[in-house]
Image 1 (cartoon, helix red, strand yellow):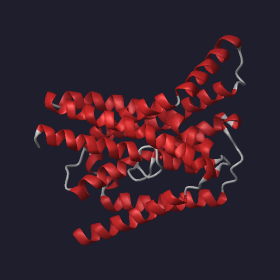
Image 2: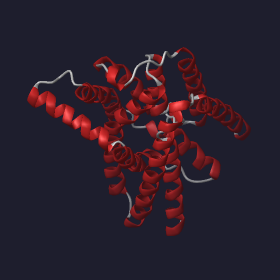
Image 3: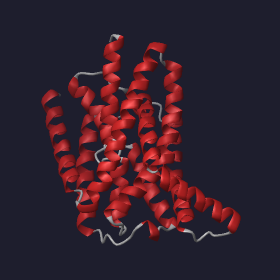
Length: 277
């Protein structure tokens, strides 16, 4: 590709990342599948994780007030022994909820050398996982009691939802999808479930993006870095818009539109793969 073609390629990857990272439809799946459908090259794990930095810039900017409140809660707990403060319990829940995906991600990085070309990143696997997740999301919508808010946070929520978050390392699961689904199953109302999902994702996405960006910078020529920065920038803008949309959408609406999309996305992928295999 020429330099301008690479810039256009990464710009579009950033837009896809921004649209799909926080909506419960799986950014990894779309960044794997759409380039194939459009005839682009597979961006790979490092590029995908690097584009997540744009998403993390967006979520930190969007929730900057909440993050400041959480930091004050940590300060109160450490210096004034106010450990029953809701902000401190939220901070502790985010911390313990981040550990499962960090350790599992490290395990995959160190011991699963063929992860990028493994069956879990294949089109049939992504399709089946997407269909399964749509069914789980439907169950959460039908069975969830939706009475809990962030004021009701418990450390056990961080542990339970954190383990669910680690499943997002499987392409097609969707980190926001599986965590919102798990939160709904345990009685959270939709908007609080989404907010907890976004806050919980900050450490995990940040660590993943930094680690992979370091590897990407080391392997890319200088001419590749500018297109990558363009992709991160477009990811940040679209991610911010997506966060705002989902928070406001879930105030009044269910996840049925995403459930329906994920189900037919999986079905169409299977049909496409069968036709081209």
